[in-house]
Image (cartoon, rainbow, N blue to C red; front, side, top):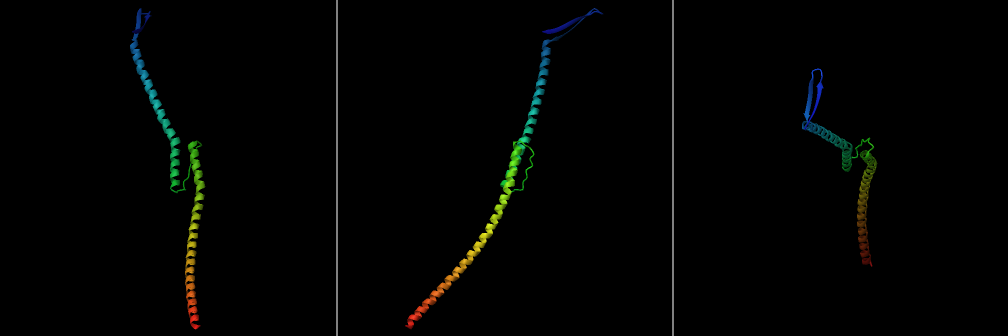
Length: 161
C-alpha cells in the first residue's frame, strides 16, 4: 500500500503529487524503535551498574572495614580506630565496634597487670615454700640428732646402773 497526496499548483496548472509506501514507513519506524529500545537498554544497564557500585561502596565497604577491625582485635591489636560518620546500619556497626574496643582495652590492661602481679606473687610463694622446706629439713635433722643423743644417754644411763 501507498499513501499519496496531490495538489494543484494554479499558476502553472500543474498537479504536484508525492507518495510513500507504508512498508517503508514501518521499516523506518522499526529502525527508530530498536534505536530507542537499545538506548534505553544501555541507559538501564549503566544505571544498574552505577547503583551496584554505589550500594557496594555504601554497604559492603563499611562491612569490610568492620571485618578488618574484628580481625585486628582478634589478633590482640587494640590500637585500631574507627572513623565512621554515617548513621546507617553499617555506620552503627562500626561505632559499636569502636565502643567495644574502647571498653575492652582497659579491661585487658587490668587483666595483664593482675596476671603480672600474680606471677610475681607466685614467685614469692615459691621462694617462701623453698625456705620452709629447707627449714623443715634442717629441723628434721636436728630432731634425729636429738633422738640419737637421747638414745646414747639412755644406753649410758643403763650401763651405769
